[in-house]
Length: 145
Image (cartoon, rainbow, N blue to C red; front, side):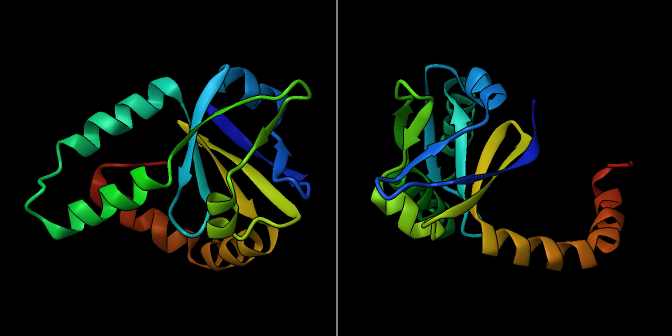
């Protein structure tokens, strides 16, 4: 399971160091794609396969399903580590997530998220204010802390 929050920088060539414990769990190759809330989602190949299978079950007759699949898969790219343990993120993904210098790398259960530091701080501040409300709504999904 991925967990934790780490501060890193992306260099001018689009390379970023991922924490060692995440690198180990991601394996030698992994998939990065557009995520929700203007961040990137990074999946180990096994988890990517699970996501792919789930998305294949969506009906192509529904425009929302087609739109989400296009959004998710068109941004996906297989990534590998360089000798220094960095990953080179493609320009289209860096542009989508507004990754230019300071980044936050999050472990979120089955995936890693890469955020622009300012966007993460704004998102966290807004979410922190409503955390209790969100937790209460999760009870409707048979979830209890």
